[in-house]
Image (cartoon, rainbow, N blue to C red; front, side, top):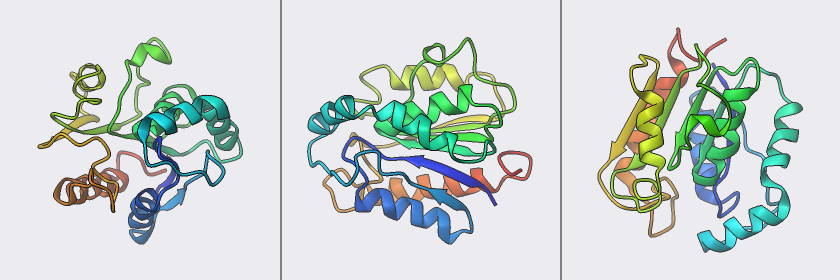
Length: 193
């Protein structure tokens, strides 16, 4: 079973983020879900992003990762993809990355994606943030020509499609994303230590 460090999105550590983590735990994985907002939760993405800038979101994520073993799968939801992708690319011992609703160009954190670190990227094909702001292009570049890197696109235009209890929630896409994430975590040659 894998040990996962999951970073929440701009709304904070919501019930939807907790539910996603709990789904991984029910399959037997150890999942750490730090609250980088220290209890604050937002209903508006812009307000959450602004708050993340005030709180040192990335520095907090780095500190938390430093307290855990190196052999981790890094996972992120939207804004949480930033620390997840950075740590997967730069921290020794990374076992894999799950990037949901976001992806940044690999060169944001290094010259190349590290060999032997598998990755899955998930997003909605018409999400204005994912498809319209360059994340989809970055994801396509990341997975190009690599057998251990996958991009999954889902029909729809919502951003936080895994976030239960919100208008963005897309139950079919969320269920398929969770199924694929679990398969990724259980691959014998992939992310298990």
